Image (cartoon, rainbow, N blue to C red):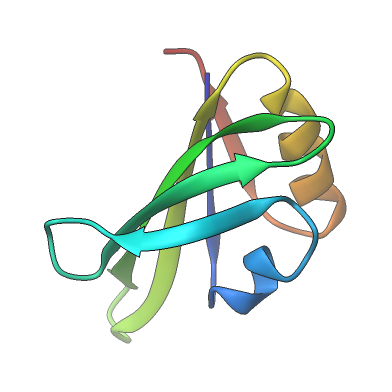
Amino acid sequence: MKVIFRSKDFASIEGAGFGFNNRRPMSAPWHYQGRIQHRDWKGTYECCWEKTGRSGLQELVWTAHGDARLFGLAAALKAKGFVVDVEQD
């Protein structure tokens, strides 16, 4: 399954206790990957900077991959006010 959401920065996600860690760059510029290690869910993630709208503001687009336990991550993100999309692989 996949959990997709957006944030304004890394700190709001990595510092919130969701378990996102071990961020490292990928081969494409401004793309990153890492692991999700939390007591209630585990998985991997990818994120990249994306321009939004005409204003050209940038947001991070996060895609978390894992098993059904990521429903817990989706619920936690929604509780913090993030807009979350959940997809089956």
